[in-house]
Image 1 (spheres, rainbow, N blue to C red):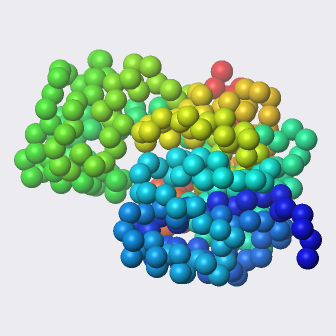
Image 2: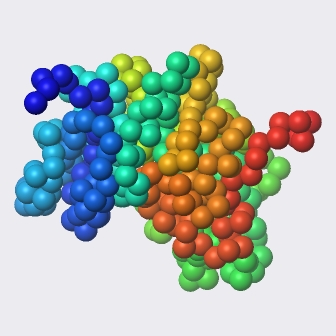
Image 3: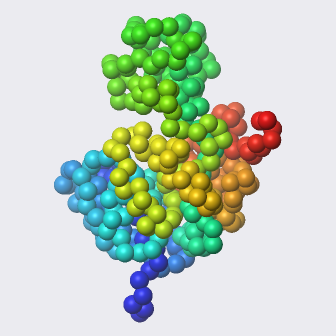
Amino acid sequence: MSSLKPPVSVVYLARAAEGIEAIENFRQSYVEHDAGIDHDLVVCLKGDDASETREVRTLLEPIATRFVTQTDAGYDIHAYLQTAKTLETRWVCCLNTFSLISKPGWLEFLYKAAIRPNAGLVGATASYESRRATLAAWIWYMGRLIDGEPMRAQTHDQFLYLIEALERGFRVPRFGRLGRRLRLWGLEDEPFRRRHLLLRRDDLINDPPFPGFPNPHVRSNGFMLRTDVLMRFSSLGPTKVDCYNFESGHEGLSATLAKEGLDLLLVGDQGAFAVDDWPRSKTFRAGAQEALLIRDNQTKTFSEMPPSIRAISSFRRCRPSAAA
């Protein structure tokens, strides 16, 4: 057997709180789909309940190279960064708890794309989405609801909790009129406290860290890059907004590498695609997503959308000249 170190560490985040089923689903998909190249499988075992983490360890011991144990603090990106500090490989590929391997040779596809001369970051999924546009949509939508417009029939499921709260008589505290100045209110009562906390951040409106649409970025699941490049972000702040910024902000991973002239590549089993060609990849929100190397809860959500909603969420080719 060769004593050479594998070139890649796959960091799998096994967050016990997500339940053993999600982790077992990953394990089964990993066993059923050969990676195509030698690698270390480094399991980030995250959790505070000893019995839960023990069950996860027992499940994954037959396939793991080693475990890195962490408390259930922070978010996925923080877990990746903490685990990356322990790696000895030149390359790292990060997978979240809900990852499902869907193609043989999945890691080889990513690795071959990552070692291209000008590649900076590659991933199994990528998006043009702008979180700034998402924030604007939330504010506009909630303003219409609070002003009493009947929108239940045309709402997306993610807004139903808000409609139901208002119908039960919940009153949103106001700081002034919604509209001319997009000011945000302090949503401290249920059902808001645990959801979308970034909506309370005035600075996201006054000085948004997110580019407008199109905002090409590799999603923070199933991505691969050099370990030392990932570690440039080791001082990432502790909040969810900091993680959003890491993924798709002006100073995030994708934006930083693109500014340095490096390529962002979306990789499926039909090849690696540059930013302008992402809609042809048949991966994330493109067609039937049949070329996906790695699936997750977001790709599943897209697959289960009604056709009309799926059409809205689908990739569209970026045509900068059309916006001029």
